[in-house]
Amino acid sequence: MELTKERFTLPKEERLCSRKALEELFAKSNKSVLAYPIRAVFQETEETGIRIMVSVSKRFFKRAVKRNRIKRQLREAYRLNKHILNPASGGINIAFLWNSNDLLPTEKVMEKMKSLLKKIDESVAETSPAI
Image (tube, rainbow, N blue to C red; front, side, top):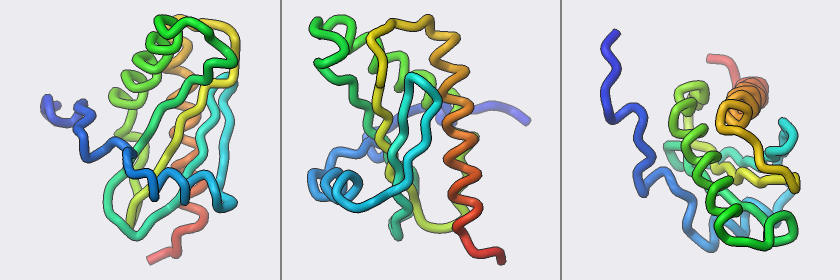
């Protein structure tokens, strides 16, 4: 199997930007999984595709430089491992939230993201009806 460059991209269509979608994601009781220090809140939607957002609170890092570093690490870890998610039909909106005061090396963030994406995939597979 030949890997293409497009497989590892994170285009604008995969980013969760809509205020309405964000409010819906956090307002309703949605599913949440944790792979400390990353927490993912997700919701299955009728739309196709997976859309994500990344958030690092000022409560954990006062300096924007550190918050931006964590956000870059999270986006990169997702971008390289998004193939783990395989929604059968419809789509998923996911918010990745950082829950620690500690900076982690990129390899550790990658590990945590992989385990988180596997948990999300299992949870979505459980709720999806068998064909």
